[in-house]
Length: 254
Ligand SMILES: [Zn+2]
Image (cartoon, rainbow, N blue to C red):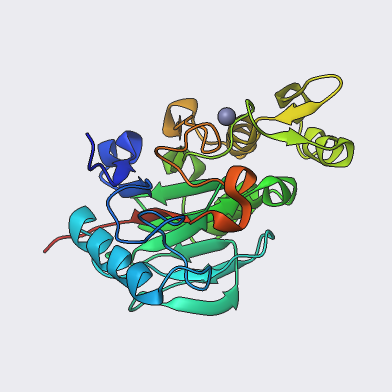
């Protein structure tokens, strides 16, 4: 579909949760941020980003603007309620236990993780680049959910588009850190001369080790770096890369 502007998580939809990942198309931003850029201050006009957000809220049927935070590649959590805001706090995990609150993570190659537990009414959006993966942001996100009453067996997770192992060449130090970040991670750091890492599989492993069921974890393995028609990529386009949103919401219609 030429005008497709986001993809929905079919696993989250199956569990009655809104989860989506935006694509490049369907927005109003000019080159090189064409056309659906979701971050301010990159060189795109602020009014374009705002229009893109308003359109997404309408097209996706979100309850309002999604909460966003300043992402710093760590594992701090921001609790969100009320109206969606661009928070000034540093956080790579956004959590809510309220219905009709949208949470969003901005990415261009990093992995967006959407988690939800319909039983306890808790939703999380988390940001896992390689640093976040080493900091075990997925494990911390689950732990925050458990702390607020979720059960691991009820949590469903969608791992969105990110830079794939086809393109994610890394240095020796990064390779070591990723290989050692959790038990079994080393098998997803491959290559001899040059090392490549699979952020999807390492994060999936972390979620499994938290007790999530295999059938409750979805991987949307579309590489952002390979696929310039559909995705922005920092590795590919550096400062000329726009940003996507990964959005989760537990919608409760009256
Ligand atoms: Zn690739």
